[in-house]
Image (cartoon, rainbow, N blue to C red; front, side, top):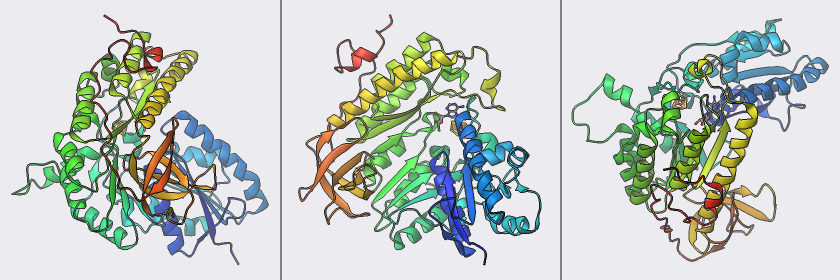
Length: 482
Ligand code: 5AD
Ligand code: SF4
């Protein structure tokens, strides 16, 4: 009898997590069941990422670990899907001929046919489409967590950020019909989901293509994304709505208002900055400037009490000078980010930035990366420290990864909190916790009957950092330039 078990390894972003749940759903409808590791699985699927070069290297490293497994058991099926498959196409089959199936970002629905073909083919079966009309959400999913679901609201991206390979791999932006999204969310809630994360490369341009296609009479004076948030606010039993990622250039005030007015939309905003230097933002073709970015941050903090703001920043983009980098530090400090994901620029063949002048030496990039990491770490530590003493609502996710005597949960602002593992703190439960201790990446707390007081005071950030303010931050921020 063939071994109809599967193991999926996911690289990269939440979009890929979502795609992997769909791939698992497709495999389970074919009769496959999960296996604990690649060694024992009859089918191993790598869902790949191409956003930075180290993601490529990791994949090829892991594929070479599978070679002896395949040689020992030729019936084992090895599948590679996702962004790197789309980017490298035939190259994966050439570099790792022990792979059975390679499929692109638009082909997950064809998995059953591709697997059937692979059964009778001697060479890897490769299917890569340039475009699709199909949303991954149209496929069945096997969710990793019972109470949380990813919901894709749009696919692709119409922007041309010069560092980014996503538009080449995921195609132009296409929005899903609002009614289909709400219907899927209602089904998820009926299945026990209390929290959804809306996914799109650029969520706040959601629906522009739909409006272009059908301007429709009587649309309210709101963007469709704000409309969607209001519609999800009406879904009974849906406790939390998050979304990722918006683009600063498309952010509109009606979305901030929805975040304030719709009770289940969480006070969490991930707003990628990429660089604090206007010169670099121009070279990145990010069509906002640092002052507009800081205005958005100030508006968010003024409109949404207690909002936590996180960001993405790239260091060492071609042409970045020390002055440009200082601007990034200064803007990050002025924005007082609650959390930040920082990346070293990675050359992606096929993107416009590759042919820009002024590529930054690796050692300089490393040193800037460390300086930025030091700043963002102290910013998140300060943000966490401000929460101590407050009572906040936690959605319990599961046992802590480092201490089985604790359970981990998230606040509405998406802060990670560990509490003692008591009967009340079971996975999926909403509890209130008094926050007692803070570290840079998490908080400690204890479950309490006291009501949650959500509005933790976070002063609107100053546009520029006055000397000496912000305590230890001044140690890592550059001196203000005239
Ligand atoms: N190099 C480094 N970081 C990148 N990102 C996207 N492309 C690159 C690249 N070529 C980062 C951006 C984006 C996040 C998902 O990944 O900061 O917001
Ligand atoms: Fe890439 Fe820019 Fe599109 Fe984000 S908005 S996916 S960074 S091109």
